Image: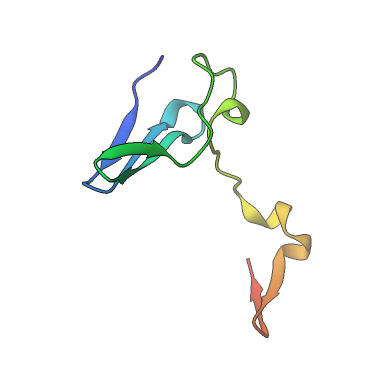
Length: 78
C-alpha cells in the first residue's frame, strides 16, 4: 500500500491516502482505552477511491441541483 497520511490525538485517529483522491482509509475514536472504527474498513488493496472508508465528493456544485440549497430559511450558493 502507498504511504499514508495519519493525523491523531488522544481521542481520534484519521488515516488518509492522498494518492487516491484524499481517500479516508480509517477513522477511529478512543472509547474506554481502546480504538473503535467509526467507518467501514476498506479492502486491503484499493482499486479506486470508492473502495475506501470515505471519499471526497468535490466539487460540490455538480452534486447539488443548480449549485444552491436552502438551510433553515437561508439560501446558499456554492
